Length: 76
Image (cartoon, one colour):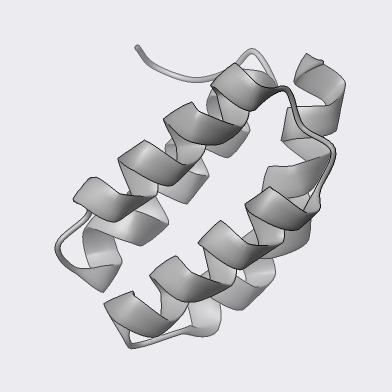
């Protein structure tokens, strides 16, 4: 499952890092994640974490940290 999650974050990262509007980015990520065949628990965790982000920097940091975490290089 982790490889799949990693690839999802890899697929969205370049788009998210060019976005300036946090709400636009949240919608993009949420729609992308829900369209993928990801485990329900992982999907809910990602969507919940995305919804908690209040600005674009927080959201980009979350995507970056998640990408690193699922690659086994993240900080907890």
